[in-house]
Image 1 (spheres, rainbow, N blue to C red):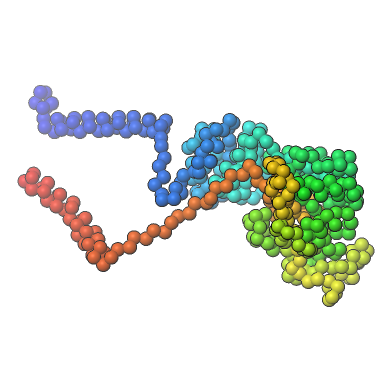
Image 2: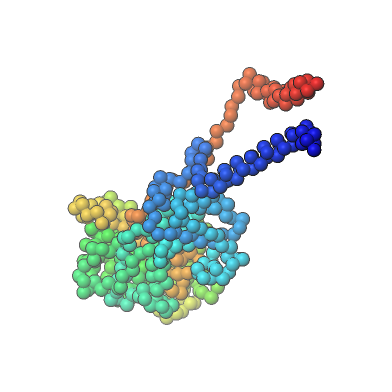
Length: 462
């Protein structure tokens, strides 16, 4: 028996077994430690896999859990999954999961998600939604939810406007819900005739399709609000004189007494008085609307008038080149479709301005040092209010355009600017001599190393 245990094979075998067991023990300890203590290193030149310091600071100071539910198809998740992993690495309060709307339709219905690429961010009892898979969009959404301050939106009332609590087809309750989901505080309708002024806490004032004229005192209150750097969203339908026309002309916005006709691209179930467009001017509001259609049930056109020194005035939405500005309003009132036809000299050919945007000059607020107001007033004017009504706001790109315009008016005070990172092309350039040595080292020296090592081992054992 003693000879058996002293046998050379058993001796070396037991040594090998001991080494294997020690190695496995070390691996087990290392694996145990890495599950609890781990670090990430980004060796890319531009930090492609490193979050910005602002994002890291936000994640480290979260007071409540953040849960992201991302509705993506499986083939489109990879890049976004890498980004979400970085967020989870920096905070134990951050969690995420992916949902494929096709495979889990019940979950998509529960979150009222009808398209791919939507992320629902849940923070406590609040939530926000983004449609862009980027660090900037995700960090801004978390910052909005974590912020104690909510920006205040007022709807003007008293002129038979669309009401934010009206759930009928012509109401604006769904638009109000979009604003609430964006973490905005939507206040009851503001009756300017009673208040005589716009409240100081108003961040955006929405005038949604008034059907009765404004009183002079109300127009003065609006003028004072804009002069002090306010932000206003006007949705003004054709065939209605609101009394706001002179005020808008002061800000270089001219409303035409017409309606836009487009017989080239008619929506199913609609007629030529509902122009459809995919044409937008270059502006932060419409940056992501390229190729996305919006439509406007009975809209007027508008034009820039005069010159407001120090201001920026431009179109925002344009009709198609096949449209025209119909000035025969009697045909619209009488619903005489045969009378609606292009008349040279009286009607204007497209493309026509369906919406305008104005950023005014330095205001009284800036001179007075009022930090709540911006340095410049902002205004968005649409020639139609129905596109944002309950009947149409969820159709195609209408709701997105309404929210993008509102967010621009809100000046994005709580938004964090994070520049997108890009790879850098850094080719290796070799001279003739360097290329010669590199080739022979690669072809000869590297393969020779294991060969020489093998010969030396064989020679020693021999």
